[in-house]
Length: 116
Image 1: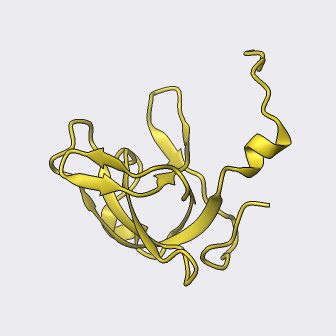
Image 2: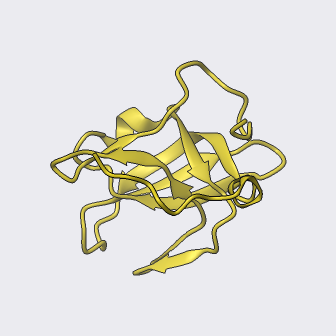
Image 3: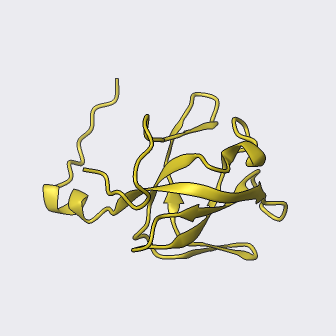
């Protein structure tokens, strides 16, 4: 078991703006070096729609992601990934084989809801 030694303060954790949003568009990111998808996620009227590149091709099909809610960090700086500008970080859990399982709410949540 790994011991965690780099504790965050509560104030540091509160700076992470983790919100729920609904995937409104998804497609394979053909230009990506590592297999990935380009997502457009609706975070509600306060935040709007943000784009993200996510390495989730092992477990997810783009067509089946439409309408799925995901948890994402919306206050990271934008990141240029090849020809694509990623505006948020979709969260997931890394598996032993290196694949990613999305972190999702277990019930429908209001788009833009913040992790409490």
